[in-house]
Figure 1 (cartoon, one colour):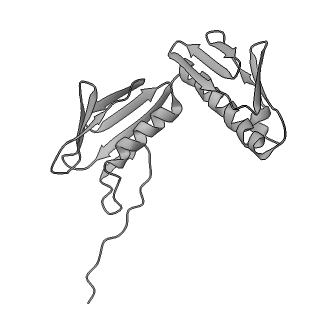
Figure 2 (spheres, helix red, strand yellow; figure 1 turned 135 degrees about the vertical axis):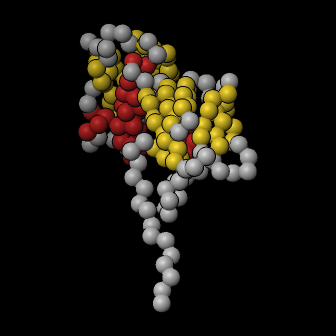
Length: 178
């Protein structure tokens, strides 16, 4: 029994939800998103609440029940509040800047890294901090993860790109024994 899938989603007044067969469209002040619901899941909109139910009790239906509910919940949060990930750059000479629709990263390589910012995402760079914002939770996380992957924090000095408040376990270096 999916505990997440059974809990209904409250839809705020400033959010419009349109159900057209298996296509669900959510729009709010930050934009609009659409989602194609799996065939084994039914959606009902009554009195400002979205509820989800399974067609049958198969493994696929059970697995998609909570997943569909959470995706739609993230869509509603995205079009009202939006999502935000913050990254910080640690290292001497490491920095980031915005050039048009590209993020320029200087991360200690012999060349600069240019990252094209996808549509629907806004990136702010202030030398040693990067903020990724958007209305799609999956896309915001994916972009932040991609930026972090250019120079992951190394375990000896902690240099690299990390999430804000991410803890990096620092290793002790080699010692000369007598």
